Length: 213
Length: 213
DNA sequence: ACCTGAACACCGTTCAAGT
DNA sequence: ACCTGAACACCGTTCAAGT
Image 1: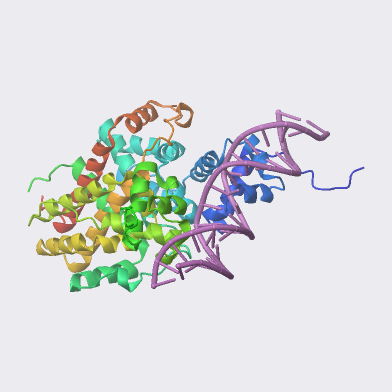
Image 2 (image 1 turned 120 degrees about the vertical axis):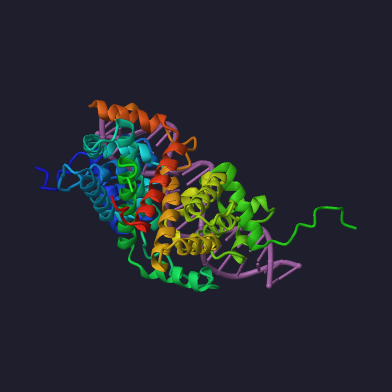
């Protein structure tokens, strides 16, 4: 009887989170309003409140969903290669949703839980290499924090962020001139890589305290 | 003639930034509205726009002001002690304004400029120890990012953040149980220290590539 | 030059009401 | 059980107007 109007699939928590993440991906964080998410689902804003307690909870859910993507990397029995792979896989996930990265600030627990599968294998690999349990956990947490922290500092580098504004970088010395050039010139990927390898070098030291010289 | 009513000191950009930071310090970020800042200065909200282009610019200024506090630490000719001191000094500044920390996300350039004095001496010390200019700069930036990134992930840990919510940490394995315990139990300061020392260990490796075994 | 009043176009959220 | 309409108490910001 009724025309073949789309039978509008039931509203659900997951559908809401997906819609929100999609909006953030291509409109930025401030485009993600309750009204916008609802509109994308062909529904009124207040309908969302039946499935989600409020906006903050909705954003928690978005982070969960974002980090629940299975990190893809080739496993290795070698702890350094394994941690390296996990770090890059996590980096890849973040880079798929640059606009959502600021949401990770202060949401460490939830996000850690989401990445727990990777954490578990990381800790296991580290233990196999000679780290005790506590050290393996600290090392994993440290690498995780390094990656997420790096991109939180980086920011989404979206249109909003204005260029280096010469006045804010007072170049009074040759050193600061070089620093300013590095900040604006050196690719972020290189700095990420340098920091990650330095961190892994440090872990190696912890593992083999001092090679007898 | 007029009673000794406070002669209300001229409104100024600095006064506005100080008021905003104070509000953030003891009311959190969401307490810092244009209207609230203005009210604290005995003025109407729209008066602020004469001294500041808009809210985003106001927050930029708050970050500048926060990081312009001179980092206090005892200098050392030894590069590791020097970097260690700078990192802890920066940490100290951040901990004085925990509610403002999220503002640092994506504002790397401005904040870097504010810390430039410390950066300059850090780079100098590293060069003196044998790092070439480019490596010294990368090392400094990496330590800076580590500190700021660490606390961005950490969050302000304010009342808003709910407890670990057992359901979000699926404890399916003994490893994950220990991870969960570490996340909730290990003091943040210890993890910060572990990560920092690991980073510095890594830099040491870069300096003396391989001690001949 | 500096500050104000009133208004605009938004927010997130509540609450009674519909089906 | 699920969705809606109308309303509330806020935002940041514009703009003409005051002094």
